[in-house]
Amino acid sequence: MGSREVVRLLLWRHGQTDFNAERRFQGQTDVALNAEGRRQAARAARIIAAFRPDAIFSSDLVRASATADALARLTGLPVQLEKDLRERSGGSWEGLTDAEIREQYPDAYTRWMPPDGESVAAVAERASAALERIADSLDGGALAVVVSHGAALGMGTARLLGISVEERMLGPLGNCSWSVIGRRQGAWRLLAHNVGMLPEPVPLPEAGDVE
Image 1: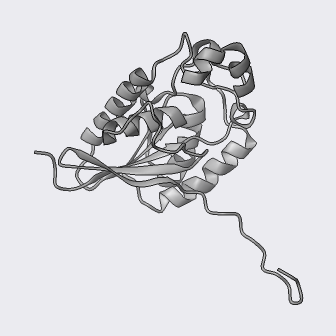
Image 2: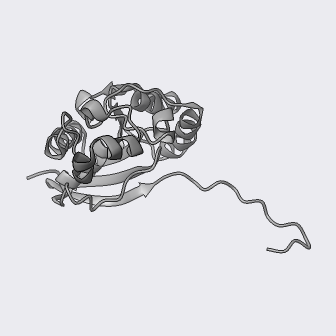
């Protein structure tokens, strides 16, 4: 029997990179955050720090670990690197734009399967296993922040929840947005999805302005 106390994982996607902005397949290419991504990470970290997490885990790719570092600076928690949280390997697709993949690999594009890349099942298996290991390392009632990548988090979460990985029933995570999953007595539940960034402030209209 598992603990009756819920263990929660806050699954945080890394901030923006130039590859994200250009709609390029990143995969396991080690692309750094751009200026916007660093700004996103700093702002989101202030919100997440208020949740008082007990641990921080991260993919060892720099865009994820740099995002995690923004939270570590606020909380004083160490960032524990986990290779199995890496993004899906895209093989020869890495570095190509969406349009280039569609043009050069039309059949594989319809299945979204890089011919020399990592399968959906393989990503779901390693990412979900990493999330289970992280949950196992926590005391009951604890919250860990897990910084990773869109596909790895989406596929890993779907596997834990027992829903279709191939059909992408979970919507994608935006840069520096997060989901929260909880485990109690061995069963996983989705508690929040694709939330996080506060909207930009909207100035109030001056007297006499037309809305």
